[in-house]
Image (cartoon, rainbow, N blue to C red; front, side):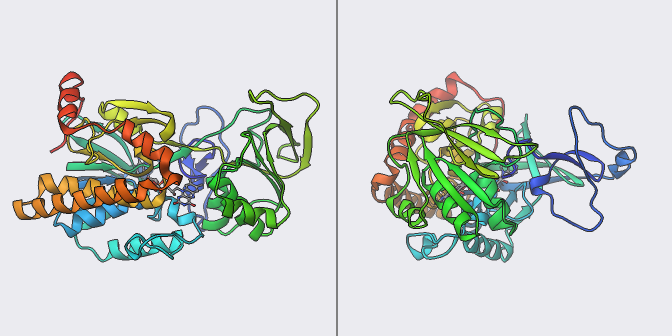
Length: 433
Ligand SMILES: Cc1cc2nc3c(=O)[nH]c(=O)nc-3n(C[C@H](O)[C@H](O)[C@H](O)COP(=O)(O)OP(=O)(O)OC[C@H]3O[C@@H](n4cnc5c(N)ncnc54)[C@H](O)[C@@H]3O)c2cc1C
């Protein structure tokens, strides 16, 4: 339910494989179940009046979450023409579903709620003459000559950018357990989509799996929406998220069961019951410790994984980082990957949080400006980039809360000189510029 998987594929108006989590409801919509290979309905080919457009731009931003939008604004303020492509019908990425207030300075939207930040970005971007947004469209591949393919509902673009910021975000992790495909088992981001973005109560009673900040925040939001949260289970011996978030959930009398995991869910066509089990110090289930909860919703908040398929497809050199949630591109301190003029920012660069995503967006944009703009703009961009990087690394990431992400990001950052050697050894399939 965050546009990242195939779980909600249905046939919409005869067209198969539509991600229904991103399909706006409208009059006369025909939505059908699909199974296996599904051909388009007869007559759908006639929709074939797909428009084909070629677009040239200075900077292409793939993904309109906080990282991509901050990059787009910064680059446009420095005189670059920008195209932003996003799969969703609204820009903002994960911010659209965040109802809690952000910390930090005014420049970093401190005191505003996530969805308000998304609205503010939409306002600023809407009034910029240098930024063009292509919503409801996906970047599906990059081809020789640095041509980027984008497909929308009734349009197909080939974009030729001088530089690209990849800010494609992350997908949610899933867990193996009995009947994990029953309707009612859902990711935390999915629940936020239904509840906070579309305004629908997602169930009556819930079990939350995972006590990191996402699990705790969403558990609290469920309680506020009138859903009875029966328990939060956490496989580790300690609660993963901040004390303040755990305290809010506990005030409602919700138990947080550490050293417990989910074993199975049961139900006739949908979740009716969930079974949890205690685990020993090696995470093995302890027989006889099972407990059952009558719930219709099992929410999985067990971490995120960077969405870096675009970078792999371009041939960027990647590195596995458990601290960052998975496979991410190697990058210079300016966030340029081993593919020249391809930058990475936000969750795609390694799971962190929205404020650092905004700052990485600035760094990536200023990096592109320092190469593409005229001399005076380029040198101003370099100065600003240095200041932001200093603040990001020496102050913001000095917080113990970000220690893991900081360690991870250090481990995938190489000097510009080192990157030149890596490029010589691993030439990418594509180039921009
Ligand atoms: C459930 C959940 C709860 C969270 N809670 C908090 C929190 O409380 N506080 C906090 O600071 N952070 C929180 N985060 C993290 C924060 O939201 C992210 O760190 C931040 O949104 C990352 O920004 P981003 O721009 O990198 O990615 P995203 O916000 O995920 O945006 C990526 C965008 O890219 C688009 N996209 C992806 N691939 C393509 C493609 N091929 N073509 C076109 N478009 C594409 C997507 O549609 C999406 O809009 C949460 C994240 C999740 C998932």
